[in-house]
Length: 483
Image 1 (tube, rainbow, N blue to C red):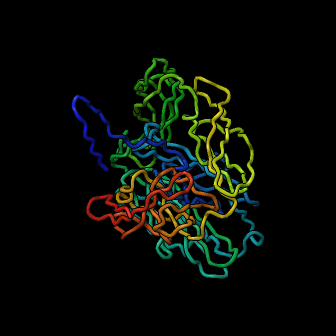
Image 2 (image 1 turned 90 degrees about the horizontal axis):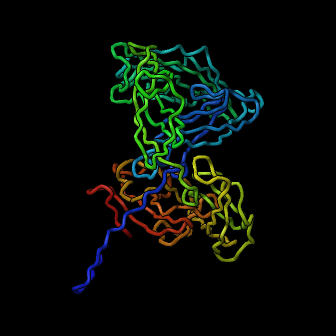
Image 3 (image 1 turned 120 degrees about the horizontal axis):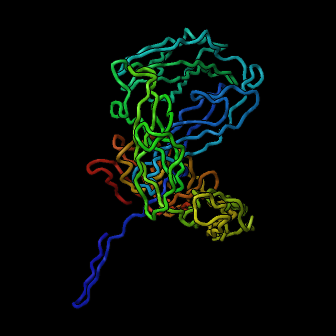
């Protein structure tokens, strides 16, 4: 929208067009979806509302090759999803964030927690492929035996980019990409019987690239990615496609170091570190060592910790006056006052003061108090009964026309799909939309440049729909029409 201002001489006006504030990429923005663990300890491949999954790990001792051991009692597992930070976010230079997800692994006791179901038959032999599209097919009926019912299907977990894995009917197809290496692919068989057991086979896959020499860049893929140096000199290793990172040095092949000098120069500085890597299996130089450099930006000094740094998010008050403390991007929320509020008959703003434990790396220490105004919804239902599904949030509506987005997160609203000013709820509580834009539909669908018309809502932190638009992604990318 443009505004015309008439000014008579000798007055002068200097106006700068406002810019959209740059947000911080957090685990809440990324929104890990569909992360589960089955009876066999196999992890499902999760999806994200925003960002790209770089790795999936766990500190549990029985976690190996993307799979947990079976358990006799339901067990909580902490799974860490490392997510690459996309452009357009304040912390993009950090490279990635690690998001911990607590997922319960169900117990696996045959004839107790489950019964019947498919069983394994022998084991699937190790597979060896050549790079650049070599493929093998495996008849899974040779390695799984049905129980009381026919096998209904198979799920595949493939934690690596070395190989592609897919199932069609009873046939598993493995095909190589452009880089060598090794990985383990997991396949589970299931039927449709109630409380039926599943069965899992693990396949070791090696992709050979004997004519290729593993180097710092392999077919356009860097051997090193991510990582950082903190102000105090603490080094976080980058991810690597190598078999291992053996040591770090300040010069190529130099004396190994475990940390770098603290940056007390008063300004950020560029630091080059060298990493000694072992070439992975599958390459002509497998097992040999190479040195690769990576440039890092080391921040200066210890900044003061304050509420802006803490960046509180997810704080809510239920209709019963119970406070959800949410999370802090930096630091840990250790306390808050008051603890609860009385119920109210109309939506009421409340001030809650959160106590944040200050982490290391800041000029102040101890705790810091951050007051925040949070809306307590009325005790009478305000969530509405109109059920919809929304996508992850984006900064501008046009982003929906640059990629395919899943509209799969269940919500309710007080209004219909064109209801400007309606209240959106998720899990019975007003949804904190952070003023982002969301694609919305009456069923789980995909939206994007190859799909038809769809509706976009802008939702504020109290769940109120601020803007309603319709998009068809035709003509100019991101073309949307306000209703």
